[in-house]
Length: 214
Image 1: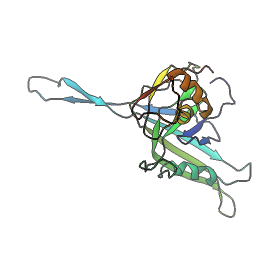
Image 2: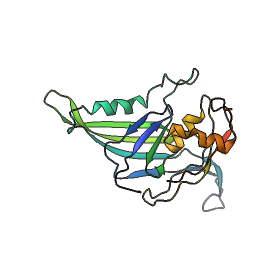
Image 3: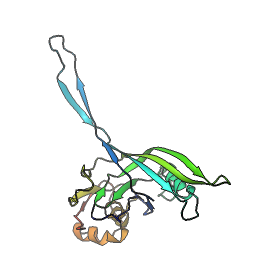
Image 4: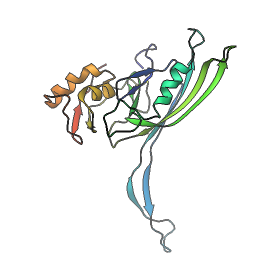
């Protein structure tokens, strides 16, 4: 991490930034692949054949506490719950929850969906308003994209150049928000890819995402 003041946050495809009040103590990344073996009575173990990759997952534990500012912690947990609900701001025909990425300094996750969310409220005011919560959140990879974060988020390793596959309804500003955490960086993508109309991208095409020096 480049500094102790860099806060982790979740970023939705609509450009909404959901800050983590406290940085997580750990991140867990799980990868898997499908292999199949055909039984053979002459072998002690089958010869495996590759059947394809599986969606990766990233799990994180978040600590939320609003006891110092007078607000209620549900202002933050409600936003997380929305990530599991259909996003009505998406274009017609895309009735689904939003895609989400997790960012922390130079650590950037794959584009995923919230596949598991657990919230435990732990501290309350006398009137019953919750002011502290612990959240367990799991993101599951949504696309086949070569965008895996380094295993050590504090290593300071620069982000490599990569590509992004366009899904229906995506625009350059949304893609910039996903990869750079800043929608205004769409001009960087337009210049690198020779895009004249940032709102007319062909679904299924690939956009080169140049490295952004931090």
